[in-house]
Image (cartoon, rainbow, N blue to C red; front, side, top):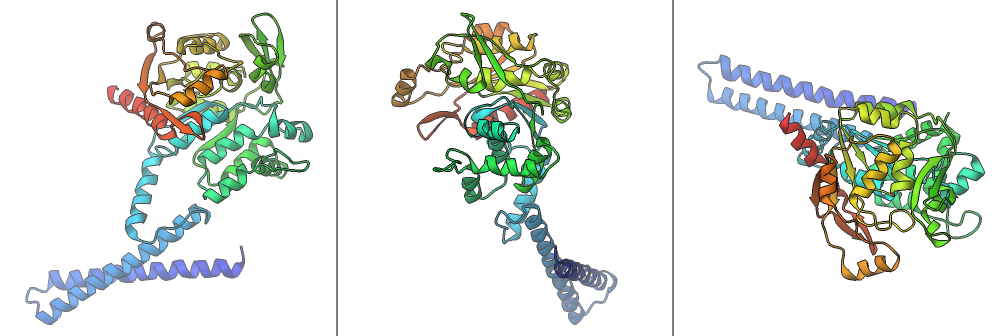
Length: 423
């Protein structure tokens, strides 16, 4: 920063503080006149009231100026600054409430996790998003092959979901080039690639990008290792690559038997494990079962830390099945697949399930594509020792069925509150 600007900022703060101190002195003087003059005259009474009034005004101006400046600094100048003390008070109170919110670790990837994060940041600022890095398709795959970096797509979406940015900035970061060598590539992916290039690691690049965009909470890749996802179908066919697994029904239909990583002993990021250890709530999903959620559980020590944690463990069931991954799956089928790949069971406490109805026209389109609503087989889920929380969570976004961010986040917070109330 320019030294003159620093001096000017320092001068402004000193000036405002001086006004505040002068205000306090005026208030004290007025109180002294009122309290210690038993035979106070009318003129003295007026002077005392004037002193108190002037002091209150000076203190108000001091507080308003300083809080406005601090809020502007904290927002990196990206959001509008409130112009009256009522707005300031509301904002300060809301931020203090967020700081006191539950510590939540969300594990997964894809659009499902970013949807949940958009809702959770309305209720708590203590959020850690632990995201898979097995993506090898689209713009992320291009950068992964060209630059040798970890895939940025899911990370980018989660950063934007937690960011405090203007709509125009979000549009810029989500913009995809339409022509040339960069056709199909997201500007946000390039931004993260550049940030990684000037940072000591991909993790540091993610952290620095999060700071630039004033992110609420943390976004953490589950590992810094270059990993690929492999699926074995029930007929024995092997599908290599996350992108091909998600679309294998188009060239070789069949149910997935299991997925695994292309290397053993994949080391997790210590920050990701710490986030699990520190969480009071751990949420799996929503998102693609085999390509977004389970890959995180295949990284060493992740399941171990989840099982050992005293946190509330919640699984968010998908609204729709996914062609190529979960055709015909019920809620218990999803949970059984998680337990199978985790190598242990019984660690999920709650399952959040949608009960809302998809509009007929949209549902018919999903049926034509081979997808259907995930059916809740409540008795089987109950036998697993899992409590179900049923809510209408549907939001239709551009013709697609999605979870409503705030409704889903509220369901998570309600579970936290009810559990805390019983302790």
